[in-house]
Image (tube, rainbow, N blue to C red; front, top):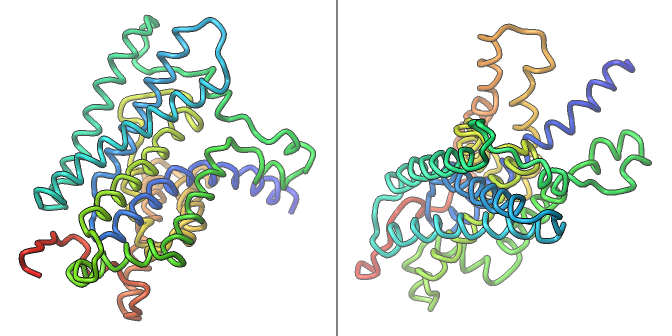
Length: 329
């Protein structure tokens, strides 16, 4: 029994760390989809957020002899937000202003983001002069991973829930704020109206394009923080193609959470645990790949169940993926 408890205590913090970038990505995508836009560019946006933060951290680490802790955190944080914001603006311009196909634009944005990340990541690795193909950020990682000072005094509870860096808790706070805004405020009501029926919202005086732009850009910035967390907190190293399929898992989590940010909190940690479950089970390499499929299998099951139940609150926005032409109103 003690052995099982010890394994669980060591497993849960890893599940939380694995789930945090998924939570950022899913929260950002939920906000975007509530405006009626399906952004499949989330993996690329997370990639750009990660490389932007890594670039800012790298340049600051190598430009000073003694790092200022506040600047060491604010610089990569700001760079990640700006980089992901630019990606959100590109997507918004193409899909809202030019009314390009959302699926094609999102996939193109993912390919573009991964290419940008790999190019600049490889370039910065060469500039470091270490001869390595990856970019190490040891000092920045230490600052971002700084945990609450009293966590060690609270036993297993502190070890599991309070031993993480501030980005873990920020992800939960953002998800809760998003849930409150979407469900309890006038802004959230108007945003949901835009996603359900933009023509009706437009007739009621809501600026549809403005809501779509703002929701997409805010969602992109939140998703970009997921990339920043993975690089500077979880890994502390930038490695090309090191994200794996986490961006796609974040999109799958949106369906699992039935478009509710607060449900995504528990869902992200569940997905994080399922994603690394194979590490605590003695199985072969082939079986490990099967275990990595578990989050997608769970998503499919949830999608089937919600489709059968046909509850409106568990369905995506009615105008999701459809371009809005005001002339047709």
